[in-house]
Image 1 (cartoon, helix red, strand yellow):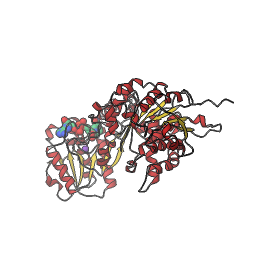
Image 2 (tube, protein in one colour):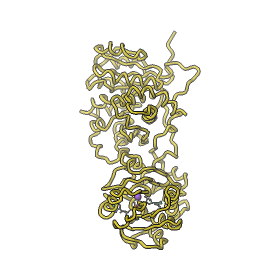
Image 3 (spheres, helix red, strand yellow):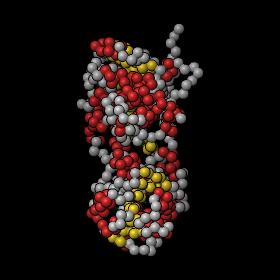
Length: 507
Ligand SMILES: NC(=O)C1=CN([C@@H]2O[C@H](COP(=O)(O)OP(=O)(O)OC[C@H]3O[C@@H](n4cnc5c(N)ncnc54)[C@H](O)[C@@H]3O)[C@@H](O)[C@H]2O)[C@@H](O)CC1
Ligand SMILES: [K+]
């Protein structure tokens, strides 16, 4: 009897399902959303009033009545501050307001908001902080263009030194909404109220440190404006990809669940074994390790459910891929920085397999990255950490935005890039990108990356496209760490927790 054909093979891979409520908007996209809302009939003053009202409302909800100082900047972020001050004062709170710059220099909506504030406008000075007030930071928001210095930096330093509670309007001053980098100096907020949609900067490592709790307020911008903006960045969540995870089917057969082939190395054999186990746990029907003769016995004596095939020398991997049922390939974890790894990667790309390139498979192309990029044509996910990324894309490292770094690398290489870290970004060559913050610091442990590569490879074997597999992999990886839920986690524990994590993603 012939063995059943693999069902996934040569079928289009299943891609993410965009969700409007998970969209993140850059500052210029947000400005476009404001403009579209204004064009659709909501005046800018109303948007600003709604923004300030949302901040004031949140403050009243979260804090007991107490003295407040509102620090206003020279633009519309400051304009929001004037609204917050007026509304808190109306609610009976003791409010002082200080403006950076002169009232006469305010323009447009901000000038109108200032006009409605009938009480004193002070200048920024340390005396404002006498009596330890709650601080509303409305100095700079989406319009931040250069480092925060001078009086603004001084007062923020003072607020921080005194440990005063801070509520940030839109973003903590100094945090760049797009890049998530700090320009000059910033301030740690307990709460950040942003408008319509979060911005990428809220989810950078710095952003997560500085924003505190993030509340996204509706300010009356119609959802329909997103249609015109066509955003391409989402916050990772199972709703983007959970429906793509394979559900059990009555006529399931292991070949229908894909066959992941992992290149095993000669010395660091643990990495490929961890990846292979993760690939099986995540649901690949078969996972085999292509092992060099010298290490065959090691792999054969290990986990009995991993298939082990001999694959020695530079050409052998290409021959393995003559079997079309090997629909997905993972190369890199412990595979060795050598010609065999390099040739296996090129063979996988040539054979157009769903391919995950990690660790050594990234590093072996450092001397001539174009040899890798030229070979990419099919579905490829590359999963570098920052150091591996720098080897392949040295000129992109200086870009301040991690999302843009990953996007540029994806565009150049033709592969989907999963750039690891506490704020993992997955970016596809067409510009779609996903930020994952569903990750625990406990993931910073040896072998954790091998597990992630195995999960992604297993998901691609089951028919997920690279962006979906990367996003799902990063989330499930994070969820597994949360599920372990105590100190002392090692990579093997992550694998044990995968079934529960997978279950959580599917619910
Ligand atoms: N209609 C709208 O556009 C709305 C805007 N909103 C608010 O408006 C904010 C954006 O307003 P803007 O675009 O006016 O920007 P900002 O208020 O963030 O700041 C802009 C001004 O600050 C200057 N500036 C930038 N960085 C500086 C630095 N380091 N030191 C000194 N000056 C600096 C700029 O040259 C500009 O004059 C959002 O963050 C949000 O709070 C909300 O009111 C909702 C509606
Ligand atoms: K701010």
